[in-house]
Amino acid sequence: MKTKGSTVKHLLLILPLLLAPLAAHAQQPASTVRDHLWLFACPPNADGAYLENAGIRGGSRMTPVEGAFWLGTPNLLFITQGYKRPRAMWYESKGKVKTTMEQWAIAFESVKPKTCRIALGIYLWDYTGIDPAKKDDPAYRRGQPVPLDLMEHHCGLGLKWLKEGQVSDLLILANTHLDLGINTAPWMREWIKKHGDEKLNR
Image 1 (cartoon, rainbow, N blue to C red):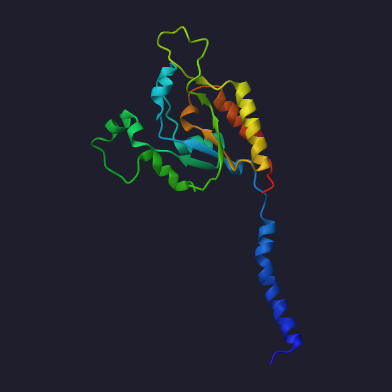
Image 2: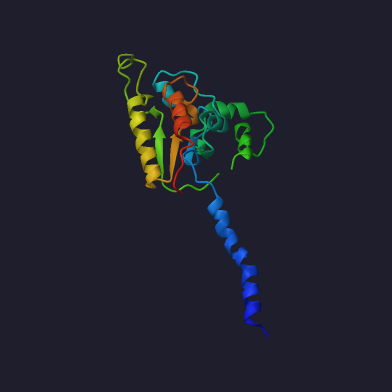
């Protein structure tokens, strides 16, 4: 038969177990802006044809994981579409040992695919914009880096919405624009260095 004293004793023993999850949650550090940054990634040079329209030859060799490390984003979203696969990749695979993954995809084993809710895309490249300095070049069609004043506006608005909780994540496009020598790539990297460690109330 339980007495009042034994009941109190049992409650005192159980209480720490009940409060442990709350204590653990309270000790978790607040997330940062960097925790909510993603790199939109695709196979190297997957959009090479678009870049050639803008007079950029040779394409990009930046792999998805390389791009994430260079840019300083801990999260990565990988997009693959077989019909857009660069033609060179088909030829390179002939006569080679078949593996379960392409060589550039093996590095994904070191990265954790997370779920993301509403994300705002941050473009480094304007696929339809016209560069005034190249518009008279008969070989030039379209495409240019996003002007830096628009990058400033875009990222500033994204940071504001991220802190307000209107968007869950910022999605940066893409690894194939990081090694072309365009000015938006280092600008984005410095922006992440500046704001990446800012705390969020989440």
